[in-house]
Amino acid sequence: MIPSYALELDGVTVSLGGRRVLDGLSWAAATGELTALLGPNGAGKTTALRCVTGLIVPDAGRVRVLGGPPGGANDRVGLMPQSVGAWSAVRPGELLRYLAGLYPDPLPVAELVESLALGPLLNRPYRRLSGGEQQAVNLAGALIGRPELVLLDEPTAGMDPHARRRTWEVIGALRTRGVSVLLTTHDMDEAARLADRVWIMDAGRVTVSGTVAELTAEASLEDVFLRHTGGAA
Image: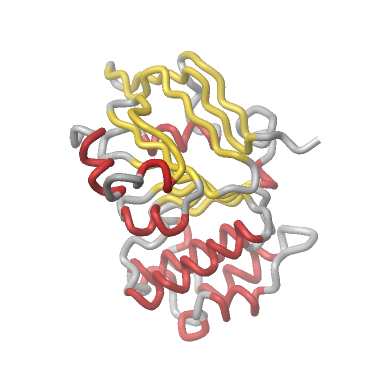
């Protein structure tokens, strides 16, 4: 049976270095939908993602990923971090062929190369790519295993408008195929265009949530964000 939620955080509390980073955080991402998690720097978004991937064990609360504990379904989850230092000396073409070999039914490398316009980048060392170009490679790496759930951390950071639009199209196609997507971004237009539901958090807690239509009925998503966050440092 397919769970109703691809991700669930219920009362999650995390303290790091004597500071409470997540304070009873609760939110969920519905299966087959694109969920945006928004918040200012320091709100706890990255810590929440680390709880989802199993890198951090909460002090209290529960995290469920595809119906099970974090780490129990890693082969079904695609993670796109903001940077991948371990790939610095690798050429994207070699990297994608290697990653494809790790899965029984990977997406064709040529399909990803075409959809993300990676052709000119394939033989250049990853470290010599611009930030936006690295992001496009990171996204291809996250998708190549045909994941059921994709975690996208600032996926279009550093991209020019053409690359950003291509990335939006690829992300939109994921949702069309029934893939569950969690998106963190500071781009309010990106969240408004792509998300089914938005959760806005500040100081380790959710401050407001709803569908894009609900949240923007009387104001822009940016205005809603500013109204419900305090710009945590």
